[in-house]
Amino acid sequence: MKKGRKKKKKIRYFRIGMALLLLILIVVGFIFMVSSCSDRSTPANEVTNVSASSEASDSSEFTDDEEASEEASEEEAVPAVVYPDITDDSDTFPVDFDAQYGILIDTETNEVVAYRNYNTKMYPASLTKIMTLIVAVENIEDLSDTVTITSEMVDPMIEQEASRAGFVAGETPTLEQVLYGVILPSGADASIAAATYVAGSEEAFVEMMNQKAEEMGLKNTHFTNCVGLHDAQHYSTAEDIAVILNYALQNDVCREILSTYQYEIPPTEYNPEGLLLTSTVFSRMEGTEMPGVVIEGGKTGYTDEAGQCLATFAEANGKTYILVFAGGTSKWKIIYNTLSAYSIFCVGGEAYDPPAVG
Image (cartoon, rainbow, N blue to C red; front, top):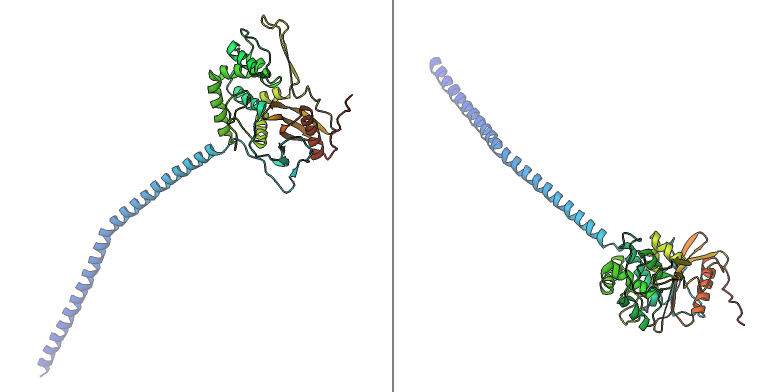
């Protein structure tokens, strides 16, 4: 009996041992299989991650390139000038001021001090020559170089009764002399000479003027000639002219020419007595008539269609101001109004009291 029981116990232990062994083998096999799968999947994950990382890097680089390109485009699109702001303190010119259009700008704050129809299209007459000066100066490398005056530059201007500097066909003034001739006496002959030297013809030069206007971001300006002769498609605004003048003042050569009272050209074979070029601005005023104000320079203009025009710049209270009037009826009233505007709006002074006549 005891031997039978012992035998049964051995069989039971054997079965239990086999079951445990089988269980162990199953567990080990499962662990091995999981480990093997993990080893096989890891490289794939790593490749995926690398690929994703590479794509992210490429995407990042592409985005950076796009952003750089956009920033470059934005920089190229930024106009060369910033228009002045109308503020709550901006005033209107007195009703008795003899000008249809006008604007006074504080260039330090870039704010409009006073205005009237400042952004209404008007004809600029010889205020055009401020842009003529800008384009010429920016495209001339040597002001001591010369240009030959031709009858084609002079005769048409005589026929149209345009103001002239006095150059004669055949003479060869320097470009410096020509540019002073453009501004001081408002010479049409000098303007055509400068245009021809720079661009080969007035037509090509006018294209450059319009390109410059576009580059500057001017809102409502278009040129058909470099002189200021009337044409329905030759127009600007008081605001645009002020912006053009302000731009010119950033160039030392332009500022010097616009500020000059007289410029003397020595005698030549064609002009034995020489030429004395006198500013049409300072031949009508001294610029120091009003206390606290010094008018430093500018440009006049006139055609029947444009009326009297005057663009000036002045120092007052340590600031530079720019004032444009256009559409006036009297060349003297526009001078008086200019003096009054600087006094009233820039230093809180009185209006100009013109001297009694006769």
